[in-house]
Image (cartoon, rainbow, N blue to C red; front, side, top):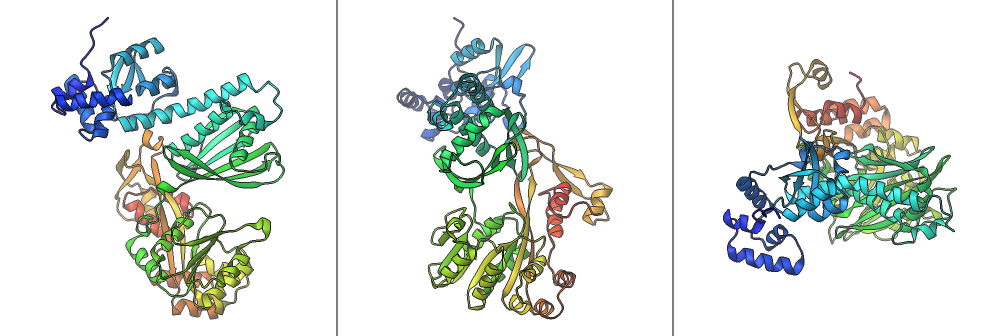
Length: 558
């Protein structure tokens, strides 16, 4: 048997990171818990992952690999079975001169290296990475493989066999459908996806994730799985498994890594079969901090001034998925006080807000926004949130609620802030009612942020200068793409805003001679920043790109 290299504990003692006494205590804990020694030491608080990694790197010359900065080919990942990868916290990243380069949390584990040699058939060279980053990348790379394995298992064992019902298939605890779907959801959470799309093609079932507002295809598999996958989702969401002719909506509470993800499920029938969209609402990552959603300082001051009004109506405008709910909840978070009775009517309630009474629309029993509003007005409210103004009836009641001394918050679908006034007029609301009650409008969009891990500076070209309205070149930023942002160059999103305060001059135009252009010109002259100007500021500050600005605002019209 080859000579065993120095073990991790002794190496850390030799490097002065821990003492002999600490190592003995840690080894005793390890024997009881079965955890890895490095994990035990970190949990004891006597060292950090960074100290462990640096000690190994310095003493043995084992390279440190930043897994978030590289993209590993799937055929390399497939060399090492997932059970081995997870057992030894190892991930293969390359083949160099016939040897497999494997990144490990403990590259001193001789027995692990020998097992990897046997499992892969390759001579193994080792590298080290920070444990938390390594584990995230194992989940990321092997998640797709796990889903594909479940799909293959289904085709092998179930696709050509008769089962009485889809329910019979998905109720089995060992069913590949359960493994497939759980893996898809877990992977979506890992990718910070907001939505999962499962949809039929002619011969395949396609799975796509919406990440940072953009859809990305994750995998395709045999169409034979579609019926069973949809049945499983319907069971989880308490929907009618036998009904596939009409749309259905439901919810799932999905537990992963000690916290619960709320999933909104929507099904629709298509000519090729049912399509499902699952919206992921991670309450643990949801922030209601108005100062962190992307508002510039002057925009924040304007908005805070608007919401300080004791009555009136404040509208938030934007397309679906533009962050309107986050903005409204952030406003309520500021206004929430024990002295105020705050009641909401939403479709659906996305997040539970402590200290606030929330109601959900239920059209099946005739409980819509208008009926909900009437009920709210009998509950002695101070502040009312209406999820969306969709029709004349809801608009009328909202306006009259504001007239009677209530602060009303709501959303509406328009292209910009000024367009909200025209939309209310189209709904049949009288101009004097709008001018008397409308306190302000917030129009917004979400733009993708440049990935900070791979951001690089460059000088703007003539086209970019023209679009940004610049006379001289300036330094801008863009992402080159890395594994942390899945090679997109973007990671995360931030809001851009257009805030219209309704002052006496604007009220006068609404009452006498309304045109959108007149109000917009007056508002801009008074200091309103348009959506495009708001985005230009974020481009110049290195937060987003010119391309993203053009996508999110009005296109390249320059």
